[in-house]
Length: 165
Ligand code: FE
Ligand code: FE
Ligand code: MG
Image (cartoon, rainbow, N blue to C red; front, side, top):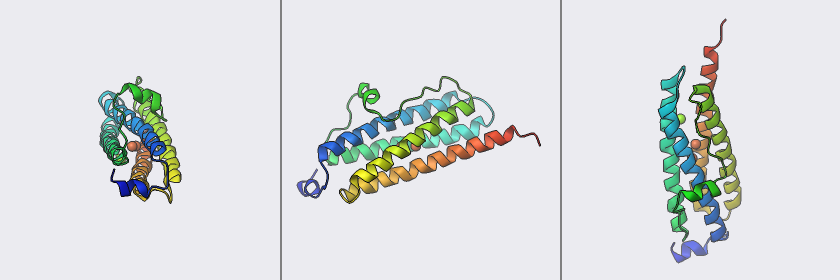
C-alpha cells in the first residue's frame, strides 16, 4: 500500500492482515457451501431456496474479492493455497451431505450467524483505527445480516407449508 495509507493506520497492519485472511477463508467456504448446496438441494420450495443460495454465493465471492483487495492494499498477501482455508477459517465448512431443503437452510443460517459475529468483531477491532477497512467490513456485515434474514424467511415459509389449519 502507499506509504501514507500505511502510516495513518492506528492498528498493527500484520495483525489486521492475518484477521482479514481468516475472514477470506470463511468467504471461500461460504461461497462453495452455497454454490454446491444450490446444485444438490431437494424438497419443497427447492427453486425458491436454490435461487437464494445462488444469489448468496455471488455475494460471498464478492466479499472474497473485497477482502483480498484490502489485504493487498495493506501490503499483505491473500491466502495462496486452499489448503490454508481449513486451518484459518473461523466458521466451519458444513458439507450439504443431506440435500433436504430444511437441512441446507439450517447449515447456511448457522454459517451466516458465524459470519455476523466475525465481522462484528473485526468492526470493533478497526473502529477509530482504520476507517477504510471499517467501511469495507461494514458493507460485508450488512450483506451477512441480510443473508441471515433472507434464509430465516425462507425457513419460515417452509415451516408454514407443514401447517394444517
Ligand atoms: Fe460473506
Ligand atoms: Fe453471507
Ligand atoms: Mg438474499
